[in-house]
Length: 354
Image (cartoon, rainbow, N blue to C red):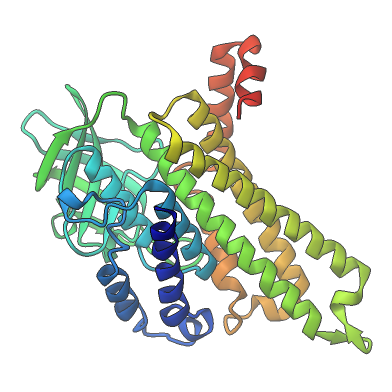
């Protein structure tokens, strides 16, 4: 199994290296690079990695999928790979087969709600849905009188108001106006909106960690090449201090995100331990994105702010991913509420067990 797992991740990294080179993408103003990349990912079965073979997917385990998402963050790819993986995972929870093509999920904001009406139609608004207008289908978590349901909807039937995140990637508002889904099934017992937000938050944490890892590598390389006062700027103590801080933020984000991903991959349910790991990871990764992006741009000086340089591909996406599936402020409040509800005597055993 370990060998197969390595092959899955290595395949993803090879495709990213061949077809998602940041410098090439940065100079492609027409977005022509996305089609061959998506085709290669689809043919390799990576877009439906979390969908079981009985539903037409690759049947890859959660751990492999998380590694694919982390690798995608290192290349800062602007295609809905993470979103399609999450959508396939969500649909499988309801026993719904995933269609071909790009997908996304709704809601992507913890305070948004999609309602399943008594006539079987969906109503509501979902803000900040990533890549909604680039997807063919949306996997929806809906609230209804009988509990929580999972549905599949064609995007062609939805009203999509275009929006952009900090990196100019689609972040759209989707309106469900009495939409009849292609399929709708009850969610498993205990599955709710918080479960979806935690899963999405960990995915974004892994992407942030990957982007920060690349920001560090780019900054270290630049500091070794850029000469000022007849020596590389990496020789100056102030720059070395900044690079050490960036390395610390990158390591912290990676540790938090991979720990949360491992907790989900090993857990039988999204219990308090998983909540602690996932919420803490989203908080720490979001904080690291803010600090790490600032340091990387400071090291690069003015050149790092130009659109011609690839630095912004990573820094702006890391910053944009902070707010998806709940910001650090949201999860800090929710984590505090969860800990307070259990009482002071339960805090240390919960933390020490991780």
